Image (cartoon, rainbow, N blue to C red; front, top):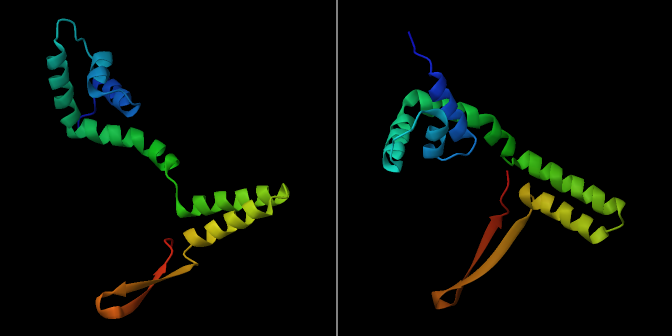
Length: 132
């Protein structure tokens, strides 16, 4: 039968996941009276290496990480929104730039680079913009 975290371990996990360093999370979760800073650090490191604690911290952080991630889809949507705002405000240049950037991140543009190498030979490099 799998053991669950103690209430102190859970409190430690919540502290770490919310941005506290391990030692401060330990101080908020455990009785540390009479412990030196070095001892607190050592105990917090041991606790943080506990697989159940590590897993729980990851579980607590996952929704925040997912929400904060910029995806290609969200990036393109934001560029399209900015293009619309610029167009609505009569700023054609900004609208064009937003549409151009949308194309670049989508991989629609090709960049050609001529590069001279030794012996007078020219090599043409075709590079697609980063994107899909």
